[in-house]
Length: 476
Image (cartoon, rainbow, N blue to C red; front, side):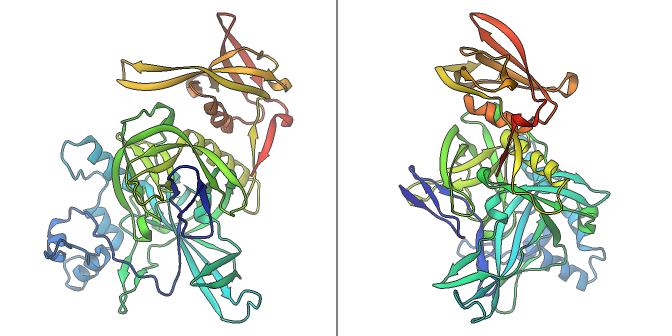
């Protein structure tokens, strides 16, 4: 059993060479790292800022500093947001004719850097000794929904990005949490990253977006932040993500990751789907429980701080949230992603529960069908229409224990499940047993689930009614 890398207090263990791509948590004092050059197409500005020696071109380039210089010289008179709008429009394509290039550039408007600040006091058993320090957890998030006119948004990220432990150990000193966390988001191009006079990496707060914590489900490593009445959002080019279908992914599909690598601002890496489904055992954000989550593996490079960032397909649709990666020094670019079909259901559940709560929710209701299923008759399937190669299981009902699923019988092979009616219907073609568990996050009290099964060689349509609170279980 190999201990995985972790920059905070979340300790991750796996039986394979994987690590969790956790938040990067550092005290405010002493945060210094090289700023990665932004790949921008403001040609005149970039040329003026880039050097050309020893393969280190552009390491000192900073867009906000360029903006300030242009204003000082009288060459630009607008706001920084207007500067960004003019030079970094998501409609710009950095590689003409490239579908992936167009998608990547547009998706930059839907991913944010996240900082979580919290005050801690040094001294262990004697918290009054040693003074207070502010620690910052760096991570990423995606804009899940957006009302730009109102300046409101919901941001989806990982639980371990927003969760601040009661104690933090830094350079053999134990700090005890003495304040409540503050949550901030930064849009791409408005991150305000710069070096101060001491060479320390800093962020301008000019375009910082204040957030509140709606809640989280620690057992699934999913959390939601809320933004209200933000002038920065109102005047920005921000866009909500378009949610894709992670069940349609196949090995070899092109994808890309966008996140706050190393806490130094939004960056992009590209790759493919390496494994469409595997289980990654990890400990939860508090370090108390071991979780075993179905994940998608990708070879797209990621770093600490990428947690909570988006994985997108080549058309620009969100298909997952990054949370894990390899800890083996000999392994390269083995990173793991939570599938969006599960994340979206959990995020919606958190948002729904948060609407009726005056504090952050830490548990939400999940529907239970009251059946035990198993996978059998595994086989390989090639989709000629999409030129994709899949593995498929027969998901079979082993036993029925709850009235909600009284229409199902032992031996039924579940072929599909549908929620909703007409144009609003959502249908899942069932290929693996875990897909049903992910799907049940979407079900609400009063819903009817339409299930197509194979029974005795015939196709049978049955209904599962969720008309009683007994068919839901609080999940934290």
